[in-house]
Image (cartoon, rainbow, N blue to C red; front, top):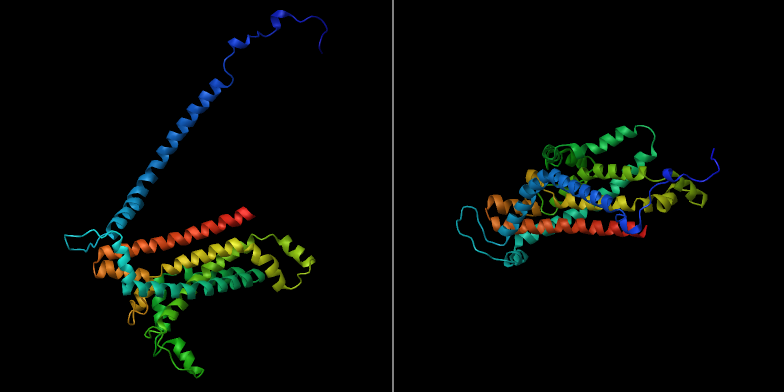
Length: 325
């Protein structure tokens, strides 16, 4: 309880004149700056091993690749000549490169839409069901974790023109057998069929993750607004909410399809008549079979630029979606 009466002067704090006061916050700012410098040095020291590894394993090899792509270097030939941008212009008239680029584009055009649509359909069916959901998830995801070379050998047996199960089933229904991997007109769609089988499981898992993130209250609200059928709820709620997931799935599928190599190397080796040549197989042939290191490096740079362009497009579209949201 406070007492009434005059204040004692010896209990009052000493008040300094304004000119004798230290600058407001100066010691605290100096201490804060010293702490920030210590934290920055610690951060650089902790990041140093990773930066060194990135320099040795990523930056320097990429720089060497670009440098070799500007030359006509051949393995075993001591002399090489600097070509500059002519090394890339020569690719425009290289029939093998143009053919492999076209075949890769066709392969991507077949694999991407089919695997994305099938992955979405499987995800919707699994999400709608209540029994054996984990079982079907595991079954459809098996091609993703399976060894590609082993699975390619299985597909080679399945597509065998004489005793392959696929042709035997065609004969049972009265259809002629097909030389899946030996016909120039059929080999690329056959490889695309294997690519679709590989990609569907991974796309299904991504779509399942996207479906799990949709708020269930939106479906109730859509039903109250008149969206009674599952089809109308899909177009009203599910498909718009899966926009970012669909974009990510399409981009990942395109990138994986562009990188096709194992199935071609195991099943066709680019044949018949180079009708299944793809970019990575052509790069491998030029660099490790014909020993044209400069040409292979130029093709590899173009390949990397295509992948980076795809990633850039995905990033830009995602940024726009986030901005508009």
